[in-house]
Image: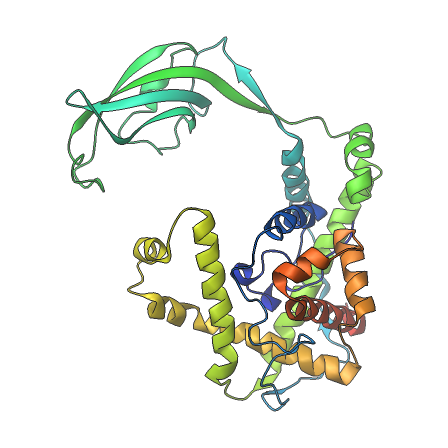
Length: 372
């Protein structure tokens, strides 16, 4: 399994859906690739190159904003990169969710904890109301996601049953028209949804995971996942060390603002895909206006700039750069492709270079580090 060596601190999630963070498994890489390929078919709404030179380095960085600590042999305690079996199991379980199937159960009664697929029509005083009806809705019994004791009233009923669920909206319900009102939901239980996960065997691994992930057996898969988790802990330790032990001058707003702009633009684009607006987000998140949101994220963006400053200075000292060959190698390793034109088109070559440069610096620091 290939390992993504970009430390989480190096990128801002909202600004970089494709190449952010440390991938804990190739499952994440694959999902990112599919998402990005789809995004790349649309006109970019975010200029990811803001604040970057063409080679990916930070604009306005004259090398004076950071004094690097000694990174020639960072000592990493073994305990900092140890991986528990439970962590490996979590990654395996996450990977196996990609192969789960749904079993529609119709021959038993609903019980607490079940996921039931229902149709419902809600009425108040005999009249339907906005947002009170749905078809094919999956509801987890006992989750408390529906008001009052709606979920409890389905327990003991069977798929195919039509149930009149009677509830009372709370007095502090968000809709004043419904607050405190009695309602009836004519509910049809379609089926109980059970998730079926295939048995994890060597044969399953060979048939389903060898080509995409390089796994040859269950033991091989777990060992590679363990190594990947360990590597990611190593990279994160290194970057925390570099941030904590390097010395920074005051970072001017001119360096931070472009990263804030990318974050804001990325958030707005993401909201648009969900059919929401920035105003919706600000209201639901408790921010007075966009300036308040920018203030809230300023420190995060400033820290990202600091990682860029560190990476750029290490790159200069170690003679590292995002050459065409390095970019090509990056995409071959992490995305199994020789053609990255769509990525460049969507994210800009400057941002791709930024990502590759971060990766080169992280690998170089990791090679120098001492574990023990």
